[in-house]
Image (cartoon, rainbow, N blue to C red):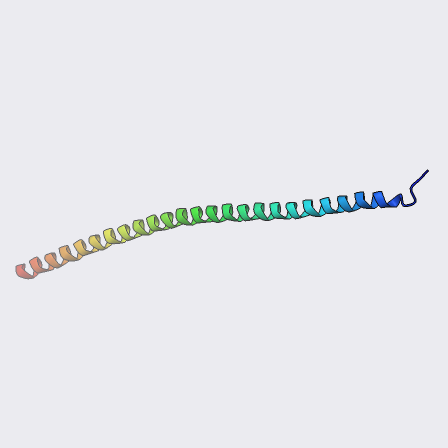
Length: 94
């Protein structure tokens, strides 16, 4: 003897599966969001590290250039001083 509404049990199973799929879809979505957020944070940290490294390199290079310029200025000042001194000595001799 069969039930008059055999489709009723299948309907419950189908609804339960749909509910389970929806719950899993929601969990997957949250996991994707978490993974993306962690990835963004990692990328931000790497970017900050690269910025710091670049900043240190730029400052080091600027310091090198400034020191080279100071050295060149000192050389020019010595040449000017020696030239002026030579002109004074020559003017006293003449």
